[in-house]
Image 1 (cartoon, rainbow, N blue to C red):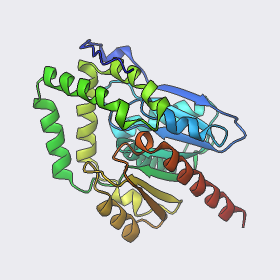
Image 2: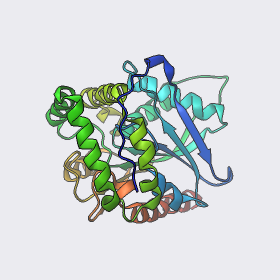
Image 3: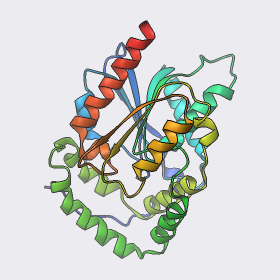
Length: 282
């Protein structure tokens, strides 16, 4: 049973920092999960469970910052990885996290630091992700509607969402269990931080990075995704991204592809990682 209690607690912006969790054998390939606009690891539990024993799993929860740029996100994540001795990894960018992932790739090209080992990325998987948002006016509209909706209305919507979660995540018990933490994290500052991230999405244009990326890039999406329409993203990657290797559209999953279709998503990610590793050895 999901606890649908929502707290309208105010937290000072300085009370949080980037959080990182690492699990799995260091000898396994590393997969770093960058969450979406909600900003935490609460919706990836079932996908994480299905990758256990296959990868060394790294995940983040973003601070509820209202002033970080995408480069600040990328710099903080890079520093956290280095602090754990991780300098080689796959990137799994979920929605907003894809924007951070592109910035990490850009930093790997331009950051020269003789005292640190260079970051090496084995590949990028976009889970409901994108380069430049395919419908930027709608992205801006989403932020505007998010900002003007009265807070009590948002909390009522979230309560309905949590009640629906039992059905939506019926094939993802670990994600369903994490919904209680998801509920506890939703508060006033969290809403403001999500608005800030939506603004970053609407303003960002990483197309130049995508169009000069040769490392393997894969695209994973749910079939029903009105937030980031997959036909536009897939068509762009096919035409313009040199590293694009393939895609998988999973029915009947939605934008939160890792939460609503964790088994199918995990199988596809594992296949892509194996194929890429095999190609490197030949």
